[in-house]
Amino acid sequence: MAQQIMIIGMGRFGMSLARTLSERGAEVLAVDSRRALIDEAADFAAEAVAVDATDEVELARLHPEQRDAVVCAIGGESKEASIICTALLRQMGAKLVIARAADRTHQRILKLVGAHQIVNPEQEFGSRFANRLLYRGLIADSVFGSDLQLTEIAVQPSMVGRSLVELALPKRFGVLVAAIRRGEGGKLSQPSPTEQLKEGDNLVIVSSETALTNLMKGV
Image 1 (cartoon, one colour):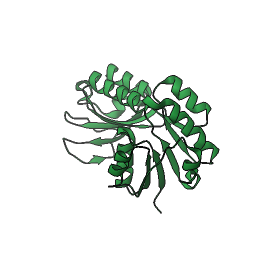
Image 2 (cartoon, one colour; image 1 turned 30 degrees about the vertical axis):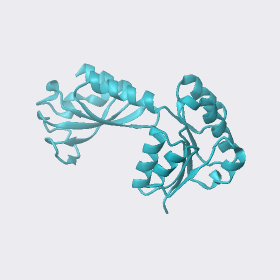
Image 3 (cartoon, helix red, strand yellow; image 1 turned 90 degrees about the vertical axis):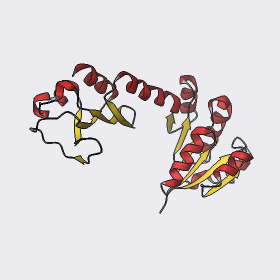
């Protein structure tokens, strides 16, 4: 059965999230007070409604408690509205409330009114983009939880001709090599601990952001 997810706020973040979730098989209910954005979301969402999510009566009619998750994606220019909406969602018994924060103060308030999870897309993107600027061998990354990420990096010059056993990356840097990609466009495979790494290889590692930084600086 497809997950049922309500997304409130069809700005750039909310719209992108709603579209991606819909493409991946979720039943998305898109909510915004702006009719033009709702008309746009109606092209891909299972349902799209023009509602003021800070109106308790109107929000209750959407039955957020019946959804697998509700994302309050209201933008930073409407902090008060996002706080009110998040509080109402919790009062109505929503199972999982994920709220978008614009800054640290906003994040603290959203947590206080009951948000289960907080996201800050701008901050997260900025941090990840900074890593790509600093470490040109970083190819792709995905974040899991608060301090764990899956990252694909190019084998650095100092790694070429050495094996994973020799490099001792878990011991030296606290990173785990989950897979290796041989050559551009090659398939991922399980890494051999004793096989020498070659120029053009990529490593897929699991680490904290701090461990990744230490690795890229230290090898």
